[in-house]
Length: 470
Image 1 (cartoon, one colour):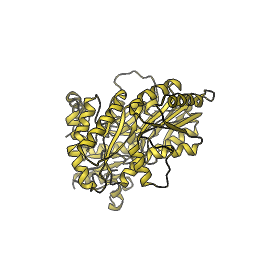
Image 2: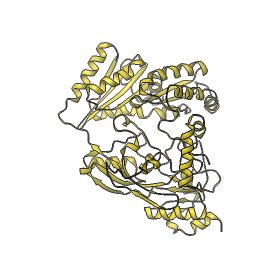
Image 3: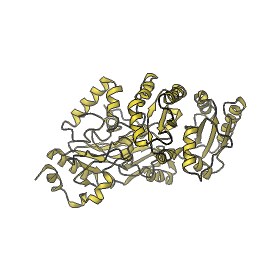
Image 4: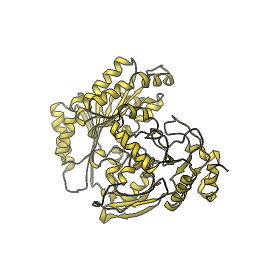
């Protein structure tokens, strides 16, 4: 009997499947970069069952790959091709344990789909601020393991900023229980933060207590045309001041990105009469029913258009119009896929440097890759831009993309780092970005990461090969 048989032979059959037709859907990453292999997918229903599985794997020396909704852009939840790792799916840990409106908190298990938690908060008269385009499929455990960002970081922060408490199973099978939904708990190291963004390499998140917010009583959504990208951060600052810091989203969309989408989905219409080089999708929300939020946004647009900083714009007059504007922002990746996919650069720089980065990086691509089609969009308020490049028309994406990643992408990362930024803003490291971490990561930070990994997982059984090299 080998090691994996030793684990599976000690578990009831309802906790795992070895059916190749079933396990196949757990083996390929979201962007189809990697396809791994596994003898079985483990599907526990409780934290106690996760503990049992992890303890058995530790005893038999079997590596585990925790997986949520499998929406990682960096293959963080994909097993290796060796077949020596077991996949641990959290999808059946999907109970909402508690909602406490008086405490503005929600406690839920790791396999809960994000949209389900949003709906539960809404039913309680509150809001879960974490919001991503993958909300219908991503799971909260994966969101926390990758420290997801999304469209509301500007006001509410990253996923880690919404965590009050955490339950997890450590690599030796111990249960970490710091799940209390407390805003003040100053009792030593904040150990839960080590698991947030660790991509399953330090333990398995099984449940979380999250901050909720008051449900917006008002939402004002605007789509703006801007000729000069240099005014972006000035517009954001003025918007925050005039609305009393009630800007929740301030999303940049380039003309190229919008054009790709409109060409790929010809049933869509341009929201403005006159095309522009740059666009902003701005949203303001307030839980106050009496604050004159629409008047504040209206005054902002009047001033900006009068000064020529905004050349055209529209306000959503209904929830349907709001959804139509957000559809444009959230479906740009689909347009890239329709054109053969893109080389993605998930970079961040100080917010004040974002316009300059976009300008300089665009010029770099134009000189180094004639015909490469830019698709640039992102979160102006937190300095995160998705600087993507689609193959020239007529070029073979399968040939162009590896060439670009080898010859041009390093220059874009060099530029971001030289401007005080990062090569990885919100996607994480996984397998795909290990080389970038080696090149750009602070040596002392990498040393600390290796030391923490060795202390908690000395046998390197938790998601091996991700984030920290063996």
